[in-house]
Length: 213
Image (cartoon, rainbow, N blue to C red; front, side, top):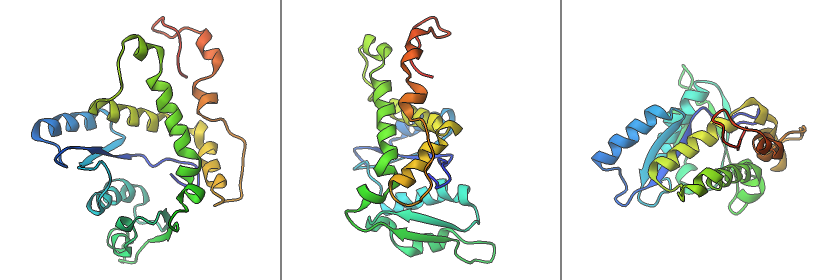
């Protein structure tokens, strides 16, 4: 996310697969999901975590279309797979071949203190997902949100909702909470925007009890 309070248009999802890669049948399904949920980029690894190669895919598929040839400051944590300056010099240059990305690395063990996502934003994401997992319809159906499609769908939905302009000030606050900017404005969080108590008193267009705004 940006200091201006925006989420990038695409969220990068890395799923855990036993062999590290999607099999032919699964790959076909994933490709279909990607056509439906157009704000996600889907990949996989054996551990479910990024490798340097996958991180490079993230830079090319998610970051580069957003920043284009503009100069920008990129705040990253100290994981060795993403601190190599060559990764950025190779992928972010202007029309004259001059590097456009300046990176600043968060020191080891300091991510929970000064990484805006860890300091505040991820808390809102987890709360959103928990609300969806515990909605009455899911409980009544005795269903768990655990499949590959569920994972992709829920990440797409949460990203889409939190990209709404009403959350702009909330995203800016994450930077303030991480002490990376001095500007603080009032904002509404996920509960206040999407899950207000008064919403439960109304009916949805489907005639069931309303759940989320």
